[in-house]
Length: 159
Image (cartoon, rainbow, N blue to C red; front, side, top):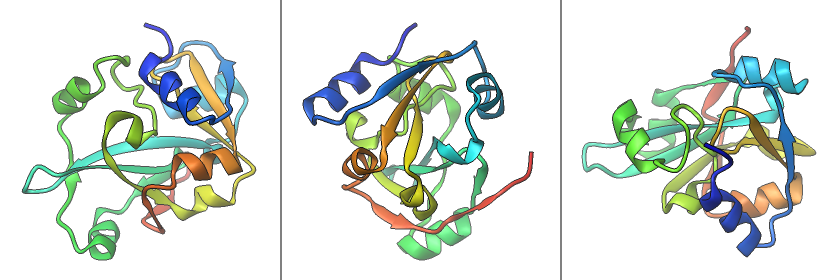
């Protein structure tokens, strides 16, 4: 499978510029960062959540970070938990398993973005396969993230 056409169509329709970065196949954010020679802090990852009412939420955070569900739920006054992998695969059927693009609106999802990503000059997005990242400049990233809340809900983990 190649780059998600749903993602690239969404970006193009909204005039969000991106540069495609090809890298060796990788099944993890760490592997992607190494093979693409990019800092884990610059790669945005998506974590899919849902609450007891089946409301879905995409949390977008740096790949070097771990989500804090308690902090997120406190900030949102919610009760979100991790979505089951099988449910994620169904939502992102145009993507390879484990290669979810951090672009919630392209998939009609609500989102929350880790504020630390707002400080970066460039952000790299998983493109739906395990061989491609999309690089977007901060202005375009802000446009992509404009529909969600920007909060601090994660912490850096050392790999």
